[in-house]
Length: 400
Image 1: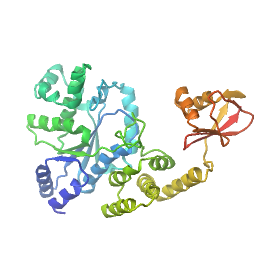
Image 2: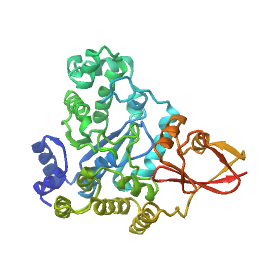
Image 3: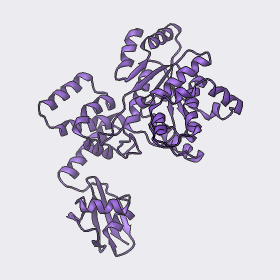
Image 4: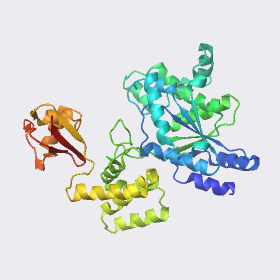
């Protein structure tokens, strides 16, 4: 395949590329030498689950693999202990070594739902960052100015507002940039909010007499609320390893205006088909039809068409016909009588008593099909009962 054609494929769906001419040169060189390019993606180890927002970048990385190149995943066991300050208005909690190990084991289980194992290189940045001496760190710091660091909007805003900015946060982008030097990356990928961090890597490579990496960022995907970027912190995410029925249910909950963007960033659907869907929605067709299609497309990517069909059918029976899920979980209550709020919290159907009370007052809690509107309601556990909270949570309550 001609390098220019390859460039057009890789450009599709990106947010920014610095620079396109540089990427074309690297692609031409790779074709001439037969040496695969090294496309790097850093993971800061902040959470164990991959969601659709992060999968947007992973899917672009897979595209590089499909074109014969190598994916280099940097497990941030060193930088994860610092905590990425990007987009933060306050200091991010640092992770323990044990948390990082657990999170990374989970990441590796999920990442091969997208990437090819034989073309994926896993590296831990502690490999080259832990051995750095005090002299090495000072030397690294001398290669980048504080003024450039403080150009970042999140840092400058914190200083304006009098919010503390700590030295370890200033060092974070330097260590992340040093990863690019250590693995000699040709391209670094990331979300649009990582653009500044990726540029640091490019500058440090120049300082270490390496050819600067190409920076490629992908658009940020809003979460199920349609407002904030998808994140576990905002509880608006769809995990690629969640049960198929959860993925389907969450997909059905996204705002109508997000349907097209999800098709573009989260599926392999052809752009022409997406345009047809967009035109149909503008013409007044019911968006739910296309959400169902979207949910099935996503599940087929990470599971199978069979499981996508099953998830769709269960959603139909549970949420449209009011039937109870076949695989409903059971919970044994030790006492014969309990308060409805206590029951919701003890069964983990609600994260807190205040949230449980709020849902009850909203009319979102049912017991054996009867809506409970009184937070002081006492539940008699004299036999099996079906507890429902919200649209998707069901539990069979059993006496001891």
